[in-house]
Length: 449
Ligand code: PLP
Image 1 (cartoon, rainbow, N blue to C red):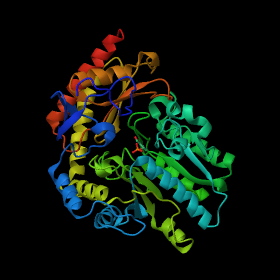
Image 2 (image 1 turned 180 degrees about the vertical axis):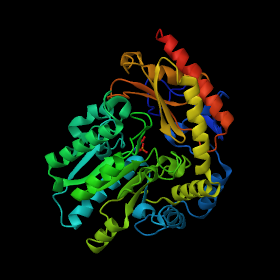
Image 3 (image 1 turned 30 degrees about the vertical axis):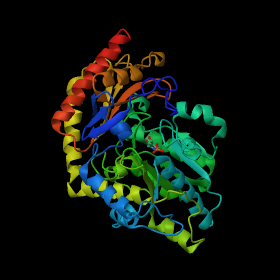
């Protein structure tokens, strides 16, 4: 019914987005028939692209058997099989999976599990969490309090718990001083984290929370060599847990199933979501070490948390379909190869661009950062909304990518995040970079550059 007012509360209250009516691999199809190349899988979600027949088949098989049974009464075949697939071999000591409906819920569960673990271990004074600025852990109040995304936190600041404090992110492009070597930068960050433990009282800290590769807030920022090993050491020394948020960077996006594999460490608790179900169903998971769960099993015997849709059978079946496909088709090898091609093409197209200051990321998780002045690394005036202009120009040119602002400090800075599906062919990557190049140049032109 053309012209009818939408009753959906959309992200913008001034504009109604076009309806997506279909999908096909790398492509999304809009109601007017336009085909949009999906270069970011939404927000790094659609890791297998759209309408993959094998995942649809797995979902339909489960739908024909059982759509839902409450976890207060039952387990389900897909939940058991998915947990076995993810933690059956106890990667990095992670031995249990708690299935929720998205990333924020996975982080909330992780925070609560850490807290309950220390109560049951007889260390109830551990009630502080240290996280980092320029990070994002979700939009529910606990996850938002953990996050360090200034813009997202600001309106809700009075509601956010002061159990969370924030240290400097391992974001070399903006935080490393010009005369500082990378090892010295790491040493400074580590000293700051140690000082924060000391300020709070080391035996009051329950956990340090971080994204191994920072996603939407800063744009695909991996930490410098040695940073996470040093963080792990500090947590161990003070008896605190390490919670890694791999909601965006995990499940193969960086070329290994878990981003922490490339850091030579493992977390005690991990959150995953987006690439877990690839968008076929809303699903996230908290993975936890055997030691944590054993402590609670021997204590109260139950994790004091829960939601109605825990381990939803349809969601678990879809995620199992996605994960089996990733392993059977050895798609992570592909992420490495195609990711290297993406990095190469981005470097070719933007390496000498006067307004692209940095190209960074891992695997099929890459970003470019836009700057007004490359030498000084100064951002554009946020009032120009350059990132939004790029998003609009890209969409106009048939490309869905994920630009965002506040890259530098939550207010200033613009970047474009790319997270193409793992099934992308080199020609798809070439088309993504080509279309992005046009969008960036046309957005810059629109602000007089
Ligand atoms: N953590 C990270 C690193 C994320 O990128 C996101 C979402 O973008 C979340 C948590 C929250 O996940 P969700 O939006 O599924 O609640």
